[in-house]
Image 1: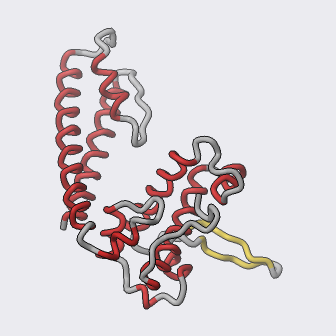
Image 2: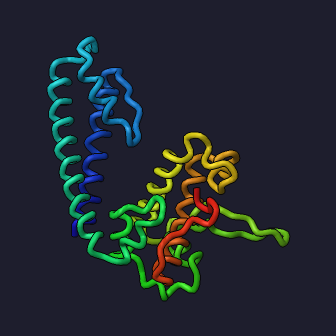
Length: 222
């Protein structure tokens, strides 16, 4: 219940941000999208030199208040999820994996199929839609686009966690010689994030089937 409510609030927050950006665009003020778009929005309305009509500023203040309220509700839910995760042994094991926080850990526990139903980690990752479709031609195997099949919430959370790893550990190209460093030299950040989420899904399968904790084998992840 907490997880689903959080997802609903996240969607509402995104819709509010996008609606406010659209209002500003109508008046010639373009604010880039993305996770970090809220602070630029606040700066736009704090800048009194902007020739924005008074009514637009008034509507903007209403939007920003609602966005802030929603963000506070999300933070409160995440604290509750964090407290619940502390009471679950498997969630604690999963949180030893880089990029897997309490929300992802609890989502996997709540919504992932039984790990015993998958023969290997790759099968679990494929079930989430994180393994690219495979095609063969002339005796060679080619990877196609990532499948949309699978549990969307867990897939999205894993990709988000992967992006966090890339942001924090990949700012300087990743640890020299690591898998992440090699990927960042030849792939885009989004493709690297999907590949990393694939790795995380396989690790989750291993942790849950072996009831172990994560140990990074010489920079296998990052």
